[in-house]
Image (cartoon, rainbow over all chains, first blue to last red; front, top):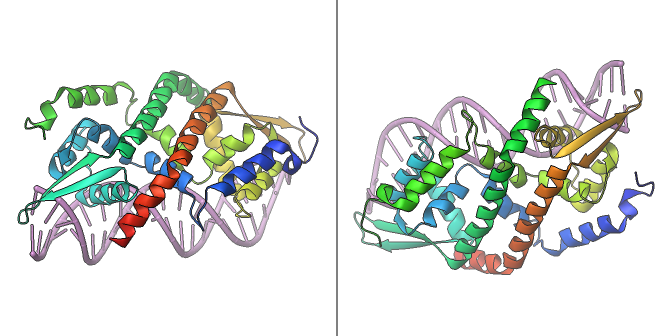
Length: 141
Length: 141
DNA sequence: CAGGATCCGATTGGATACTG
DNA sequence: CAGTATCCAATCGGATCCTG
């Protein structure tokens, strides 16, 4: 093992510098987007919207379908869509007043995020057998 | 916009099939790993351990350093390390009894995960200016 | 030194009811 | 139909104290 003070090691200093580069005030945009992809629904929403533009109610039904009848509450769906809209990943389109007709689609930025998420998902899938083994081993010990 | 029932569309059917492929009981391994990367500390731990093996206390100090004096509690650090260990991403090595000497390092699987996380981080960084603009626009409207 | 135990506040997701 | 408001349960992260 390395004997020098870890804080003096060039890789650590580089990390510290890198971390400070992309913050605005108290925000850490990188971690915020990572957290977005880690939550209960956002990745699924990206996957679904990547297949095409959908109305709010349709999106809700599709999400329920692909998550095995575990329905998303419309409150949470709205929250997640707003969040994605705010970061410019999803575009919201309103036509009609009462009843309102609202549709959502990925922006080009959202499509690019989806590609990234896809790659990560596929890697985890390829590794999932290995992960299962590690867990089984750990849980029996 | 597509006029057919979204649930009938082949891409959606393909998604549903894909989602069911990788679950074990009530677990969704893919989302679990994504959530891992989205939490407060895990990605940072991966970044730090990717620079080399470290003792628990050293890791704690380095994490504090690179997150601008916002210290991780040792309870949470232990939790996160256990979680990473369980999935086979981190290896724990104990030498000595009282006081114990414990060191952590990435496994090859953990190094691979780190590479994936890195790519995602770098993409978000490249996009961060665009995201900031979208947010500013959204917040003023 | 590493980490378990306990308690706490904050955040997240879900259920339900209501409105333009 | 889409969205808001309210209330509630579960989870997460932090602080503190204690031990081999």
